[in-house]
Figure 1: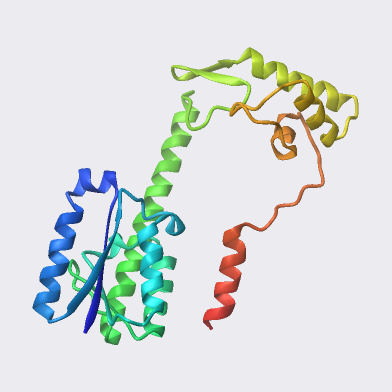
Figure 2 (figure 1 turned 90 degrees about the horizontal axis):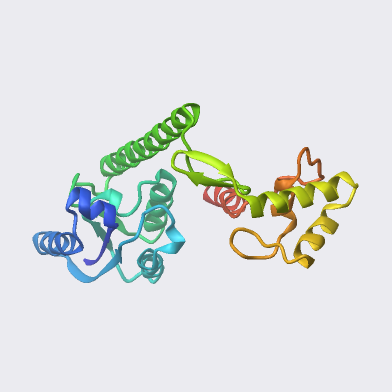
Length: 245
């Protein structure tokens, strides 16, 4: 059976867990020799987070290889090398199944060729998702605690600058905010305020021209007709749900 390996490591993973690319590659090669698989290639993503699939060149190459129907088995050192997101894992396993491919992991000994093997895979995916959400939850609570105690967390709002754990007004940015609000109190429309800021040479913190979405955040009590637009994920998730049934 033809096999394809996939290995990934982020800088944080390697420092914390010692899961180097060379170690993963060697374990996959030894596994293929033990199982009698013909290892055609091992695709790698070096220094990449598992969070954004489209940003991983190796992961995209993996999907292309699956669709070429030249491989029978995908082999990983562990499931979290592929992703810690349950939706990604379940969707990829469905894709592999559609192309008659099995998924094997060395750590945890997952093999999706049988219903029992798929159950083990699904449980691992669920546990990984739970851990991912627990980390997000803990981080959110920690930030809330810091904010409640007067500590500055996250991105500093326009108009202010960080001084230690406190904020103080940033004069240049405060002047821009004041100008925008003065125009707003004169019943100027949002598009007129944007044009006025840009014509006057005022720029965002990144040095770019102002947009309507950025400018409305400067206005006290702004009431517009904006509605929340669908994100790329909204659109893709809807299509995915409609397609898998």
